[in-house]
Length: 180
Image (cartoon, rainbow, N blue to C red):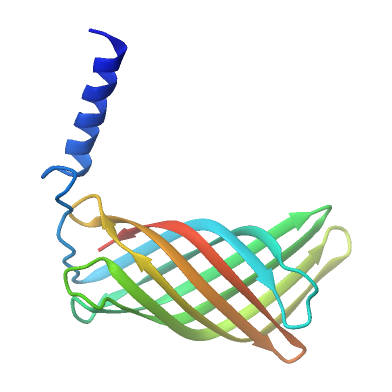
């Protein structure tokens, strides 16, 4: 058997494992009970008085319960970090969240949340300083079912943090694994 045939068989087998009904038939988007989502990606941090934005690692975790096939309530964290030359800057939120799916059977959702936000600057050998205030997150994503209770979820979130001496904001794009 030639290598080309092996590759075709491997791709066909993988497609049947991931999408047993075929590539065109995605698994149903039933949502019920407890849910969990965790993801990583890229983020861009800035502030109202900043001259430029900084890129860095970004991600989040969230969990909660299902109110209906269209509404999920939970709590979630979002985070952004960058380390360079002994200086580490982080920003993040801990917020109550709501996921709204316009279609009970579709994978697209909108996200909103309010809670606490924090920004921390740490310099190796010198110390660190933190600011805490209000945090908010808005976002969107799409659950792509790959198993009966598992989805790959590409997402985008916009995050805002406001504290007494200033503000920070970051956008994040990433890929999460969601368990329904």
